[in-house]
Image (cartoon, rainbow, N blue to C red):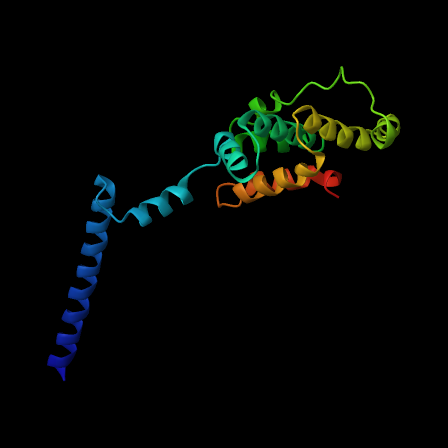
Length: 185
């Protein structure tokens, strides 16, 4: 009986040492680039911090827009968020998603656009009496100035939320969602 216990103990120890050795060897292979490519890609995806460059790439890849439209449209949305969250929250968003201020600076200037006619003109008139309507109307106009349909705003938002749906992007995603408030809803 004692021999059986000793034999099982030695067997268990040798197996666990072998398992650690294999893990160590795999880590070394990955370090020098000889590991499994799928594992390396998965590790890179989970450890990569979100960036505005990555977000713009995702927008241009998933929506039918060019990089200028993607940057300007996302800048318009982020400016809307900036006006609807505290400065501390927006500062956290900028830390979680480097390059946010650069995107906001790329939104189109709509100050010289004239009021539209029909329903657009009505929204322009109504926005004079409501800051919330004015902000929503500004985002709509900024999209139109970029040659984008206002209906694409939700596509931009959904793509941004999807891009930020990582462990590192959760805080940025939450602030973005909080700041969108009435824009989508």
